[in-house]
Length: 326
Image (cartoon, rainbow, N blue to C red):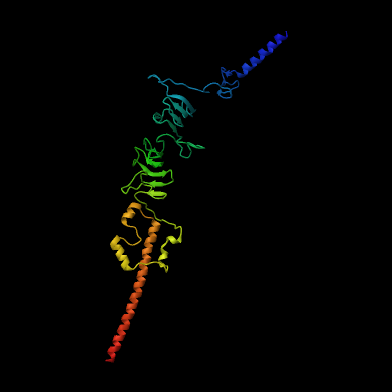
């Protein structure tokens, strides 16, 4: 008898364990459908247990290719009923070609050649809000902007360019846009920025684009209404010309230097400027240096002229005095 009781309780234990671990499905003739749930609270309620051994909770498998006369147009489609009978608005759709649309109608031609489209046609709403990091990875991965004119790749592209020696973020114009081309602006990994210049190009003087220790390099030119340049020290300005110990060259020495070198003393030659450019602040200081030197020359010439005028006046007075005595 005791043996039978023991066998009974052992059997109940295994039955209870089997009931706990077994998949519970609910398929009523009406109401909610439950998969893995005995009390579904949604039209279709799928519950995945912690000990799940399946590969996927929900899977839809389509054939390698649909038959030519197949009328299927979407693999998955969420839609909202419209005000009129038989009208619907797509919320989320997965096409048979793998394209995904959010807020795009299932038969919109844009889903024929775009992998994912998000739109609501409301300029006052944000279509996509990403909280956290977003990584665009892969060869030539780009963020494309401004495709409102039916351009295949938009009007602007931003990509991480790692093809050349200088790597960085490239702002470019895609094929089919206005003024197709690369390197409209380039932000190098070093933090340097170039505008309208190929960061990997070497010019005729064998200088690379990022020649020198600067942060901004601009091709063609800059038009601005105002530029302010700051100096690190007062020693960088040309007031030293007026100090007592300044070595002001004589005009004969200046003339000799010009004949031998073809430019003013302490001023870079045209060749040096072409090869290395100029520092605007330093060049302004050099130009001021020459102006201040000219001022000193003029002051000296004025003193000499004053002395000559006085000597001439004294000489006239002496001549007239001698003439009156005769």
